[in-house]
Every structure is written in C-alpha cells, then in structure tokens.
Length: 91
Image (cartoon, rainbow, N blue to C red; front, side, top):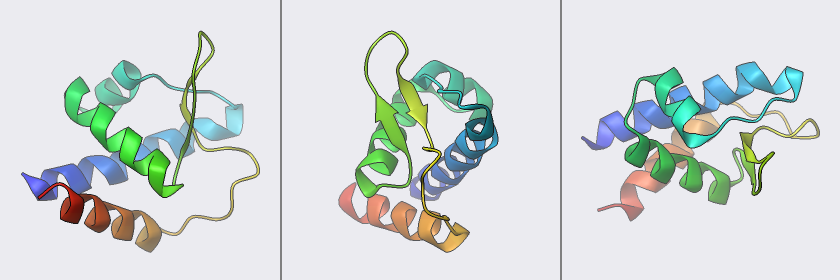
C-alpha cells in the first residue's frame, strides 16, 4: 500500500505540472480522477506534497493545488524523496 501512495504522489505532481503552464488550479476531486485514485488518499498526498514544497495550494472559491509560475525546477528525484519522507511519516 505504501508504494501505491508514492506512485500517486508522483502522478499528482506530474498531473499538476501539466496543468501549470495554463495557470490552472485543480481541486482534490479533479486530481483524484486524473490520477485514478480515491479522494481521501489524494487529499492526504496533496497536503503532504504542499508541506514539502513540491506543490502549492490556495484556499477559497478559486483555490486548489498547483505548481506556481515562479517555482524552482523540480527534478523527479525530489518528488521521489518527498514520497519516501511521506512513507516514513505515515508508518
């Protein structure tokens, strides 16, 4: 199950990165549908990715999760390490 969480974290980051050039923000349900995961797991994963600084979030009617335009370059290994950190904390 833990490896599934890591896989979903990577999928979520890629999903948001694909939408970011348009400045789009995505809600939990949209990301969950896009990565084929359930909403509860997706919410936990997105919150952790935001805490780790991989993605950003905004509250309110125009809120959601996104990768900011001024974000530094994110390498796949960074996402992987965030996933490993998530797994260690969830034990």
